[in-house]
View (cartoon, rainbow, N blue to C red):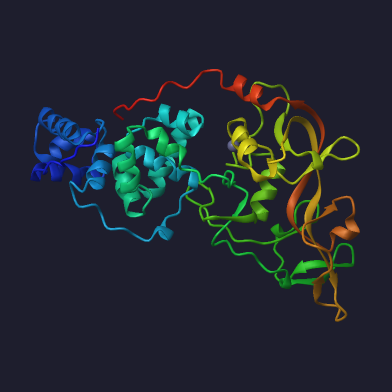
Length: 397
Ligand SMILES: [Zn+2]
């Protein structure tokens, strides 16, 4: 498939590539080059055939950069780019000319989601076309000569797609803390009289209305860096982002992508939770600080999250309640004004214990899963995706 000898491009061919990199649609190439539509189509097709590219503008451009048939664009600082990992994963597939149907199959995502993410990519990069997105992604090192050369040699975009996720680290979660998000230190908390209860309680010096949840727990503060589509963008770090975790858990959204996690085709509110044996309590309920997962991300989590190395149990949960928070207990110092941590990090504090809760800085919302059915996850996923994915093929966009 790869051409041993890269043909020297004509001035007109270089100009065509330049227009593609600038966001020109295939149908606009004729007027842009001063050619008839038929002649510009023939020029494009001839280039694709000559360079061993599928007849896809993004793939043609990527191959020309990888083979240096034209000078690739200069590289830019990748820290300047703000795009969720799940959306970045689409860019190498754009560059291999993979259509949405095959992208969905290769990334094991639903078609509507890939559709939306493809739109988000163009919006995030502020580009018009996938070819232009590949041009920008090249500058940020998201599409590389190595990946394109490997694809050309092996002739299989699926090999590249399967290598996008680093092994052993589990999926990158929406609730996960990210590089660049600053956590406010507990040192900013102080003892303060509660005007309603005339009782001292833990508080920020500059307390804001949304620092407490509806049930009175004070939450750890952390800044957020989100993409235009509302997804976190920095490199994932250990630990969770308090606000993202609590919102995801409160609304029972999927912890991987904040996707709707309420199962389709079921009556009532049914959510899929993955738990471990040690989360089971004496009364048979499960207590967890891990939000549910959508059907699409369920196998990914079950098979790759490190906490499931000892196995997992899949539950279809029909009743649950937010029972408390994980957080740090504080106590007042002798000066009657300042406070210090007295408990260990990430202890469970129930909402029912209101006296204790006044001195807690919460960082995770905890849910007790009280009514559920244990299910076979593989069977559930199989039934949800009855239509087998079509075989991979490369097609014109
Ligand atoms: Zn999900």
